[in-house]
Length: 279
Image (cartoon, rainbow, N blue to C red; front, side):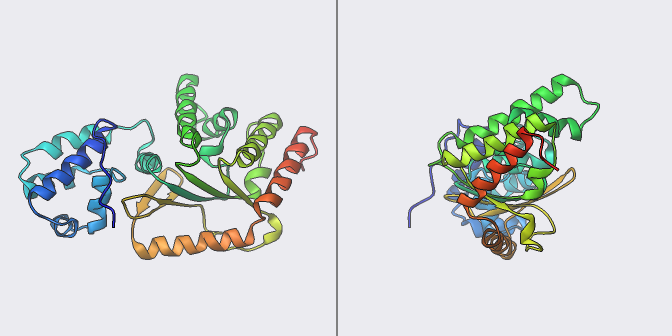
């Protein structure tokens, strides 16, 4: 079995803390499971902290400093690692997303962030924040577009999305915005930057009617599932929860149109918007 991947401490404060945590734990001769017992968490959680896929919270930092005899190193540095350009409820998920090797997502209500156009993203943010300044909306759109850089090299990330037809039919912005957004979605699929399936209305009841799903897999850390609501979000690594969500996603792919037939529907929806035939 290959050893853990070397972290680049210069890549981010979180990577630096993860590298130092691994070094301090190994210096004390503790396994991830043994150190996890001190924090009342799983060994896999310690592995995620070391891999930089989970954010270190202040209460954990204090316990780690005591257990690993590191003075106040982790307590001081976890503050810097916690700074993020993303909303608090999504920050940890976005940072984990950047290190994922595979992302599987079901989007019931809107086009996934990694596949949005700037105009579509602007319409979404303006709906969320109707009184926000243009400067703030510009910053939010720029941040979202930066996330899409993860798809620049599709060999580094497998993105597989199932999009509900409802997300394509809801006019977000205006018809011109939707025409470009759906065209962009189809183009990304044709360029093999993502696997895209559409769950059509005719599929009827399905396994994920309760909400969106996002599964993330990593090279040297356990998989995560991200659950999101209005202004809330939670990452989970519980194996049973991850397994159940993965099975739900598999059921969705079975109910959805094939990638080829999904492209046919995407092209038809874009044409409807372009010619104002959308109901």
